[in-house]
Length: 525
Image (cartoon, rainbow, N blue to C red; front, side, top):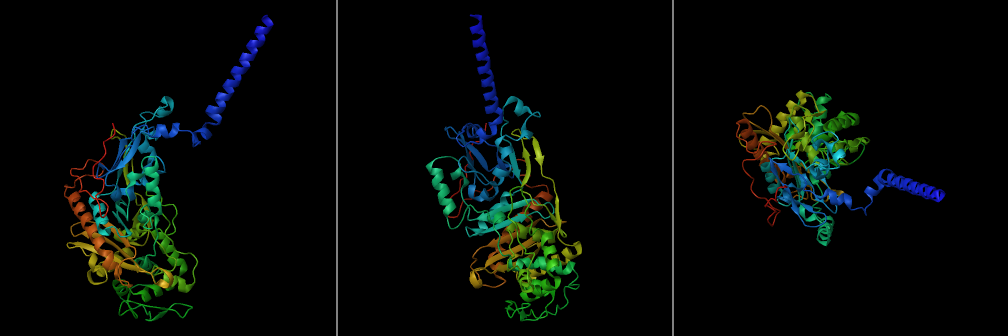
């Protein structure tokens, strides 16, 4: 009898060991694979069991959470969703996250270890901290001015603070309501299908992820290269550029829309946007010099994050002389995001230095304690300070007496450059209208804002000055708001100091043709 008991005990021990081995296999060896299995609902249930943290603009939340009563309990809601969609992105239980919702998901979802009261606290307690908050650099008044200016037309606006790199406005139009993607079920699937198949591409972030031929706005880069390389030593001296100008190695004549461009100076060429002069200067600088200059401004950089990823702006490294001439006036294969062209304007305004652009000012716990603050960071030295000072003067002249007069702001020093980029087969398409600019109050020590505006298929003639008619008025409205806020901050009267509660809520803004979601969802408990 004892022998049988021993055998039974041995069998039990063997089965117990097998159970322990299997538990180790499931809990350790295969844990990652099981967690990633789409059939495993525990992860999504835990992820949406608590409200997300908030994304803040001027200290006020533009996001919220709603108790759906479903298994995936808390759904994301958005205040003025179309206005801020290019900043927030969406947080969907079905389709994931984008933009700030994605880049700072750990903070917002409460899974970031920095939110825990003690190191390894969440790992030891197998718990999760309440979702933290993300304070953006966006200023509501500047964002609204840009949104109203585009008025539903396809295009984008980016406004930067030149010295710091803070993104004051980031608008893409047409926009969409991200809240319609928050939950699950047929309603969300129908909204996704409608948005992703729309010919207007409302979910495309044109400010960060769409590149356009920059046209004559790129001439600022070419002018910087010519001055830094010593090709031009006197901006008011003739350049010996013929008009008509035949592209090197071809019989193709490069036209001018402006008058008086034959043998014109660099100053005149920027003031009236002479294609021939700028194309000729690009050829004189040479391919290596132009590539180096473009890359100093940020072209061809695939690593830029704000913190969301940014599409690469392109300047070809291999070109024939005729292609280089066209690229030097922002044509051929040269393309740029609106953010990139705002950085070009900011470089001139900030004495040649580009501060790394960023969209998140600080992150904080649910209780308000700062987790991380974004510091100012030098990105590139795009040109020498002396070159920047000369370009400041020339851009001011273009606004005061040239193609950019529609961008002038009374009581402020404004420098700008218009641009019209051709597109379509044989350049038969309606052009993209550009305006890049910076503005400085008369009593301020440095410029308050740099801005880039692009309007797709602008209703303008195919000339180099259509950017002044279609895009410059939008830039002017944006600069006026930025200058007003800058004046208030310098006199100590700015509402909604960055990172704190705003003293006044901005006026409701909705999508063109209808009201937006203006009632904020309840704050998480």
